[in-house]
Image (cartoon, rainbow, N blue to C red; front, top):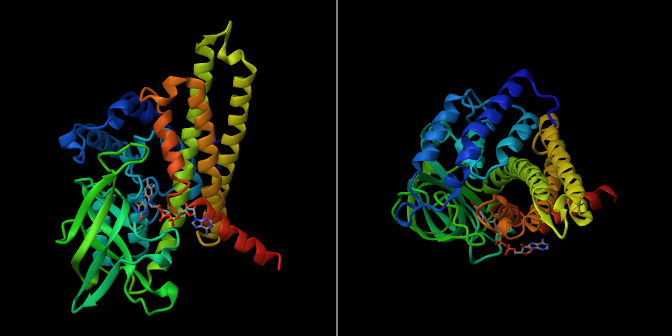
Length: 400
Ligand SMILES: Cc1cc2nc3c(=O)[nH]c(=O)nc-3n(C[C@H](O)[C@H](O)[C@H](O)COP(=O)(O)OP(=O)(O)OC[C@H]3O[C@@H](n4cnc5c(N)ncnc54)[C@H](O)[C@@H]3O)c2cc1C
C-alpha cells in the first residue's frame, strides 16, 4: 500500500527497495551473525561500509524532519518506507534509523539547547557516534516511571548521579558515546516533577557498563543491551535537558514517535513472514501433497494476511493522525498500534515458524530472531497492560 506518497518520497522508496535487494538481503546473515568474542562491541566494517553507501544514496535519517539533515518526510510517508527496511533486522542501523538513536535524536532536536545539539545531535545525525537511553532500573517496577530511584543531585556547577539502570540498549557498543539518563532531582516535588533527564558522556568516571543482557539468548551485538551502574558520576550543570523536573514531559515526547517506528518495522517483518510462508508451503511436500495444498496451512496463510492488513492500517492511521493533529493528539492511536502490532506481527511470525518446521527456529531464516523482537516489544517502551490502562482511562472519561 503506497498511498499519498509525494514524488520525493516515491523516489526515495524506489532507491530504498533497490538498496535492500542489492545490499541488505545478500548481506543479512553476515550482518546479524554473532561477531567474534573479542570484537563483540566493535564497529563492524561491513555495516560501516553499507552505512556510507546508504548515505551516498540519499537513504539517510529518513525519520528526521526537523531540518536539512533528514529526508523531509511526513510520518505517513515514513511509515511506508520504514515498513520496507523493517523487513530486515539488519537494516535500520544502515540508514541511521535504529532505536534508541532515533528517539534520542528526536529528543535532542525538540528539547536540546544549541550547545547540546552541537555536541551530540550533530554527530548522531552524521552517524559518527551512537547513544543510549537509561530509564529502566532493576530494583523497581519501571513501567511506572514515578518509581525511578536514580538520584541526580545538584552540587555547585555540576550534577552528581547515583543509581543502577538496566536494559540500556546500545550501551555496550564502542560507538556509544552518550547516555540520556532519567533520575530524581527533587524527591520532595509533586510526583511528576521529581524526575529530570541529563546527558552523560559514556567515558565519565563512575559510569560502568556492568554486563550485557540477552533477549532469548540474542545478544544483539554490536549494539546490545546492558546493565549500567552510576557511582558519583559528575557532569556539568549545562548537561541537564530542558530543566530540572522536566523528565516526564520529555519522556512523553520521546516515547510516542519511537513507539510507532517499531510498529512500522514490524509490519514489514510480518509481511516478509507471509511471503516466506508461501514460498515454503509451495516448495515442500508431506503425506502426498505440497504444504500449500493442505487446509490447515491455507488457513494459516489467510489468517496471517488478515493480521498484516490490520497491523498496517492501525500503524498508518496513527502516523496520519500524528501528521494531521500532532503527536499529543495522536497518543491514543499510537497506544493502539503499540499494543496491537507487536502481538499481530508476533502471531504471524510464530505461524511462519511453525510452517517452516525446524528450519524456522534456526539462524538460516530470519523468523526466530524476528519473533524475539516482536515479543520484546510487548514489554519494551511500556508493557501492553500500561497502554491498555491509559486507553481505558480515556474511554471511561469519554463516557462519563
Ligand atoms: C530488549 C529490551 C530493550 C529495552 N531497552 C530499553 C532502553 O533502551 N532504555 C530503557 O530505559 N529501558 C529499556 N527497556 C526496558 C523496558 O522499557 C521495561 O522493561 C518496561 O518498561 C517494563 O518495565 P519493568 O521491566 O520494570 O517491568 P515492571 O514494571 O516490573 O512490570 C512487570 C509487569 O507487570 C505488569 N504490569 C505493570 N503495570 C501494570 C498495570 N498498570 N496493569 C496491569 N499489569 C501491569 C505487566 O505485565 C508488566 O510486564 C528494554 C527492555 C527490553 C526487554
